[in-house]
Length: 113
Ligand SMILES: Nc1ncnc2c1ncn2[C@@H]1O[C@H](COP(=O)(O)OP(=O)(O)OP(=O)(O)O)[C@@H](O)[C@H]1O
Ligand SMILES: [Mg+2]
Image (cartoon, rainbow, N blue to C red):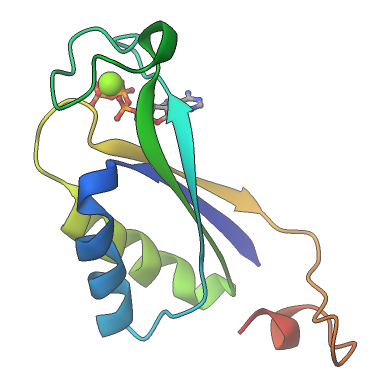
């Protein structure tokens, strides 16, 4: 099991969710976050410069998947989030130790999707 964490541009979120829907990847968590990449928030001009201390508004998308879904999830995100501009975002894939569905007590791959 893996936890896919994608930090993307807020204005691209709808496209990314649509792309995930098309691949039948429906389970997700979305948060509004602040962040900076290697330009330290300086050279991204897209609607950004009024954020605090050089931090730019970003969206954090988290999707826990079984191993055979990693590739298609990552491609769906990249295909919809890539513009070629700085600040397009980043994807982290993290080993996921365990997952519990609270309602049923299921664990592991059964509990994920
Ligand atoms: N190494 C990192 N650790 C934690 N968060 C990161 C890291 N790199 C990027 N982020 C997060 O992802 C967001 C988008 O990063 P961004 O796309 O600007 O990466 P970058 O490395 O600067 O690449 P680019 O040169 O394409 O802009 C950042 O604002 C930050 O929230
Ligand atoms: Mg950057």
